[in-house]
Length: 241
Length: 276
Image 1 (cartoon, each protein chain N blue to C red):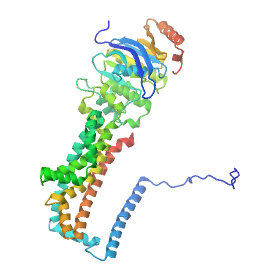
Image 2: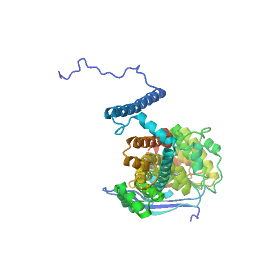
Image 3: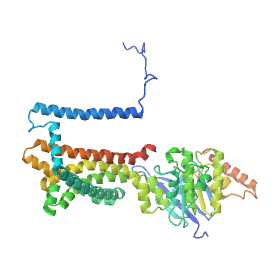
Image 4: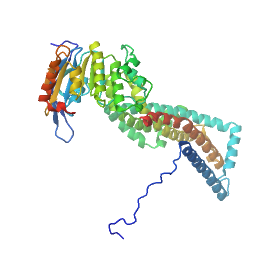
C-alpha cells in the first residue's frame, strides 16, 4: 500500500467530446502508482494518450472517470511545448516559478545541467526549439521538485545528447527523491533511466505493460531481455512511434 | 491569339540590383511625407481663407496664431487649457482603471461577463449628451459630475478592448502558472500584464482622443472654465478666430501627448511580440 508521498493514478475511462460529433474514448483501465525516487517511463504510439495521462496527473484535465492523487510538495513540469515567456530573459523564466519556501536555485548550475552554459541573459526568441525545451527542463528542476512530470523533453535532440541529458536528469531526480513521470517514444532512453516501463496500447489505449526494469549494474542482461520482450509485444516501440 | 502556346511570353521578376531602402532612409521618407501632408493642410486652410475673403467666416492661419499668442500672454489660454487637461487626466484615469478592471474580470469569467455585458451594451449605445446631461442633473454642476460623465462615457470602450485582451490570454501559460502554483500577484504581473499591455495601450490611445473631445462637450454644457467653456463663449460672439485658436491649440497639445507618450509606450508594449 503506497503512502501519502506516493503518486496514485487510476483512469477508468477518458473520452474526448467534440460538440456535434460522437465522443470517442481515448483511455481506459490505466492505473499505476509511483513512490519517491522512482522513475516511470510512459511509452506508446503518437496519439496513444501519453500527454493526456500526464495532464490528468497534473490536474489540468479533470474530465475523466477515475481518481488521481498527487503527492504533496512541489511539481516541476516540461510540457511538449517549451512554454517560455517571451518577454522574460531565460534567467527570469527560471526564477518565475520559484515561489516562497523554495531554496534559491543556482541558475548557472541548472543551465550547465541541461548543457546550455552562458545563455542566462538571452531571450527565448534567440533559441532553437531544442534549446528552448532544455531551458524548460531547467525551469522544472529550478523548483527542486518532489514530482517531475516530463512530456517528451528530449524530443528534437539528437540521440546522444538526449541520452546524456536523460541520465543527468535521472541522477538529479534520484538524489532529490523525486517521483518522475516521463512520457517518451524512445525505448532506449526509457530503459536507460527508468525504474518501470509503462506502455499504452490499443484503441482506446489501456495500460498494456507495467514492467520493472532490472538493476542495470547487477543484471545487464536483464535489461536487454526486457527490451526484446517489449519489442516483441509492441513492435511500434522499435520505430519512432 | 490564344492557341495555348506561350510564344514570346516572358515572366520577369524584379531585377536583382533593385535597391532596398535602409531603415533610416525609409523613416526619412515617411517623415518628409508627413511634413508635406501637414503643410498641405495649412495651404488648404490658407487658400480657403483667401477664397472666403472674410476673417469673420474663416480667418487665415496667421491671424489665428496671433490671436492664440495674445490669449497666451494675457493668461486666458493657459488657464483654460490647464482646467481642461486636468479634467482629461482625471476622467482618463478613472475610465481606464474602471474599464480595465471590469474588462479583465469579464474576460476571465463568463458569469461576470454575463452580468456586465448588458450594461456595457446599453452604455455604448447611450448618446454621450444624455450621459452628460443626466450626470449634471443627478450629481450637480461641478467638476465631480464632469469627470464622472466623461468616465462613464469612455469606460465601456476600454472595457470592451481589455475584455478581448483577457479572453486572448494564452491558455498554455495559464496552465504553466497553475502547475507551478504561482501566486495571483506574480501571475498577474509577470504572465498576464505583458499580454494585456498591447490592449491597454490601444485602449489608452483611442481613449485619450475620445476623452478630450467629450471633456469639451462637458465643459461647454456646464463648466465656467476650460477650453469647452471658451469655445462656447466665442461661439456666442461668433468669433471664429477664437474658436480655431482654442480648438487647434488643444488638439496640438493632445497630438503631442499621444506622439510623445502613448505611441512610444505602445511600441514598447508590443516589442516582445515582434521579437517572439
